[in-house]
Image (tube, one colour):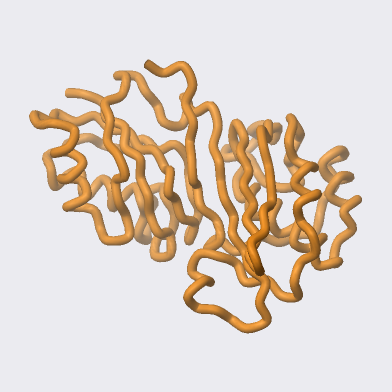
Length: 245
């Protein structure tokens, strides 16, 4: 019996989220079904983080224990042979026996994509938010977030009564033509935090919200405008681990 670490990618369009629940198709459920096809008898896999309905991932991390008598390449091929078309194991590695993809994570990085267009674009809108009217320069707004802050106005803790303090390590907007990309890395994120950060920045970029309201909310925990950027533009792209053998 050994513990394995898998780097997962999935298109979240047809999932009700990553975490197994009573109803609906989930990433965890599909991955556990694939594992059972190759002899796994465990109760649950471990995931690095929870993604909402419709959110994608290119760097989700899963861990599980398995009595596997073959090599890593064979396990990698077996998993992908049994996973559905909208999921893939990008890599498979041995992990320490006590490795936990969530609790051992040093940071996580998300990417949000949007584009400015007056007319819908079905080929792009599966993975990006179409915004109109167009936004003005978003790059300076990213400078608000790095550091340790109480992000209560921008999300909720995973557990009732949990801390809402998070440390954002890096944040940046980049533009290419009519497309904007927001990359943000933090030690952890509140529930729906990235989607709310994107929404309020777009509101500022469209002139619907003063930038001072964002700084005030961050400093004084005052309530900002409600709203969430849609999930289809969001991707979990990386989970980093430090000091693991």
